[in-house]
Amino acid sequence: MKFRTEVHLENSEQKILLTDRIFSVGSCFAAEMSEKLQDGQMQTLCNPFGTIFNPFSLNVAIKNLHDCRNYKNEDLILFNEEYISLNHHSSFNSNYAHKTLEKINQNIETGNQFLQKTNWVLITYGTSYIYEFLPKNQLVANCHKIPQKFFKKRFLTTDELHNSILETINLLNDICEENVQILFTVSPVRHTKDGMVENQWSKSKLICELHEILPNFKNCHYLPIYEIMMDDLRDYRFYKEDLIHPNNQAIQYIWEKFGDAYFSDEVKNFINENYKIKASLEHRPNDEKSPKYQDFLEKLKEKIAIQQSKVKHKIF
Image 1 (tube, one colour):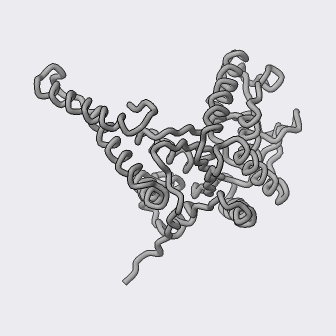
Image 2: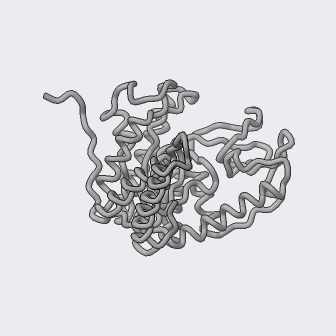
Image 3: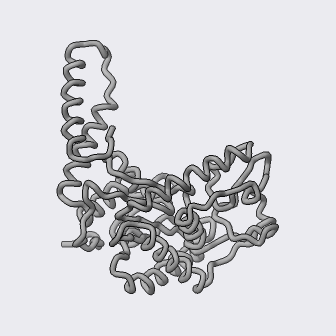
């Protein structure tokens, strides 16, 4: 007797290996999976422009990373005594232009170098909506709490969605390692401020366009993360208190499905062992000088050394 409709991730013929680099970009799922990969001591880089939700702005970020673009003073605006890039998340804002530019350009350089050696890219789109900053006639990634009177909100057109996704794929195929695998997902997080009907419309446009484009590329794949939350985990016990974001139980369930489909056995074992080591490192005894705790630390060092011998990049 069945009590739920389980959504399966298709088993990938090509697996993520210990030597692989994984680049994550977009909204929630990309960031959450990247954090778990980092905790597992895999080589990963996430969101060099900060969290981005729509395909147009994400493509701008990928193009800037591909070209290793250098941002200058004229690329910033000044609002509420902060220097802001409308292409970036608010975490880049500062009271000094040179500090904002330094962080932006450093991230672009790091992202460019990482992408050149990247084997896997994970992209998560959150919305088809976009805002136009009227004073500059510029489509933006973030409104930075600037008054709404300065913006016009609208859906990206079908052509804008299509061209943005297509150019993102072509740019990544150009800069990344040969045979890079690009995984696309749609965030299950509801943008309730848009309206429930509008949110469904927005997600539907993303899903339709992805299914139109991805079959044309052998190295591009759709992960049904949105569908897992909507159908497989169709219960509010899998959401946080805001009833919008997946909770830790849901994230762990999706992570395990993702790992089963895409991780090699070697990677699974490596990550799981590193999770245990990380938990041990976070342990704080009552007496750090006790012989028992010192023996515990020595055994932990041995475990880390064994794990380190499996990879060339530095762990822990």
